[in-house]
Image (cartoon, rainbow, N blue to C red):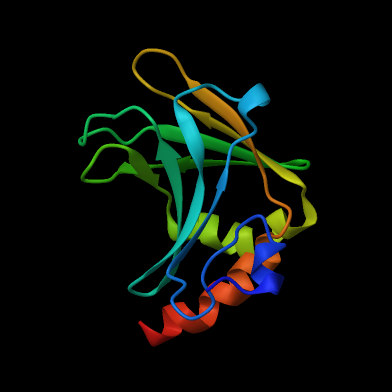
Length: 140
């Protein structure tokens, strides 16, 4: 059951079984290959994952540039087993818990072997999403 508080949050999730929260890209401002941003519980805490609609080779470690407000950060992503998600390092989670909470959107650029994948994810409600995830992730 979704609580009204979480329902108003763009990263809506289930209150009793929340293990991830996701927000989709702004379709007008984004490439079709980028679906959204996910925050998920994992051993050791919360992970930031970019969800793709096309697969990347599992051996790839593409450069990812994330910009929130005036802050631009570069990361090396890790392609997940399915190839349709890109796991970001723990430093991205630290930014989500800090600097990103002052921004309204996150600009994403993923360097690929063909064309870069670009998009914008509105991140209003990010702090509410993290607050709802922390107790559930700690219990996992």
